[in-house]
Length: 137
Image (cartoon, rainbow, N blue to C red; front, top):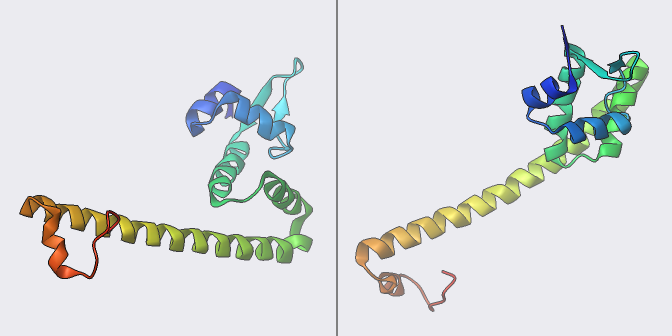
């Protein structure tokens, strides 16, 4: 089955300009075109776009994604490079997750702080539980 650029955009919740940009950047190198230049997407193109959609939010650059795609095309000779790339990206994502965990811990603390204050009807309820008093507790 094949899909138009509009169908792919809708299916993956991407904009048509984003898909055109990915094509121009060489991220979807196997997209076929009709005689008049219209892009025709196959399931394999959609699968590749799903990988791109996963890698982009992880912080992987377009350049690195393109390199990965080129390495995939090169076959088994690039298995080590691809593995190393994903080990590096895994470390990046693990750091992002730790930062998000720290953010969530702070948000949880603030939710608890304000819940207790709301139940007591005042923030003064916290004065007895700490040293000092700041707006940022």
